[in-house]
Amino acid sequence: MTPERYAKILRVLSKRQPTLTVLMDQVNKPHNLSAIIRTCDAVGVLEAHAVPPDDGRELDFQGQTFDATSGSAHKWVSVQRHASAVQAVRDLQGQGVQVLATHLSQRSVDYRDADYTRPTCVLLGAEKWGVGDEAADAADGNIVIPMFGMVQSLNVSVAAATILFEAQRQRLAAGMYDTPQLSPAQLRGRAFEWAYPELAATCRAEGRPYPVLDDTGQLPG
Ligand code: SAM
Image (spheres, rainbow, N blue to C red):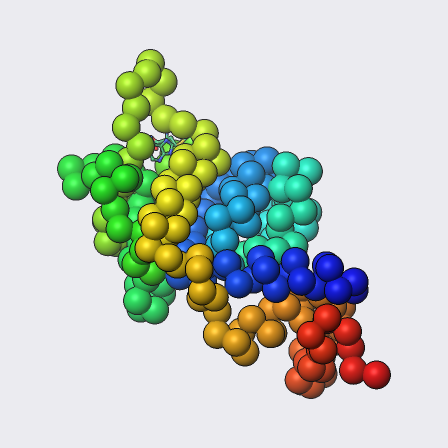
């Protein structure tokens, strides 16, 4: 670990937004998952959420599902899996997160009218059938990107990027990238995991605390 690399890790983590996330409901094409995760990394999402496709296929969120489109972003954005979208929506709401479903309904609003400075999860739907009605109903709001073309919808990763960069715009204006949103302990922990992923996994498996790194990211001698 070079001091420069460790400084970059700290810089990136100091901009991470633990109160901004996405829930991918059965998004099943690896290039779409990868592109969404790459956008999450760019915007500062710390952890994303996903419900695997309902086709019996097991998704490997640690690597295989992501293709080159992710540009290795999956190493920097963890993905928490859920069995059902409705349950995931309720769990997130229980943690004080507003869930905004990308879904056309009577109560849909323009995505730019939502307040993304609040703890927010953007619910994204499967390529074929979109967000299910039950999950959309359970969400706190429904948002849409206005469409004026012949085609009714955008590619899911394009929709995710459009909405997440509006969230980034609002959060930049509110100064939410100016000070770390992670606590010092969370930041130190993540920095260790990013700098020394294998050692971090060993420490977790053995129930040992992470070693304290010096200011340049070096392990104690
Ligand atoms: N036939 C599907 C439907 O009726 O919903 C189309 C799904 S679209 C290809 C896949 C996902 O991209 C949607 O579930 C949503 O998450 C996102 N999406 C696409 N176009 C969108 C738009 N105009 N506004 C908001 N989200 C959109």
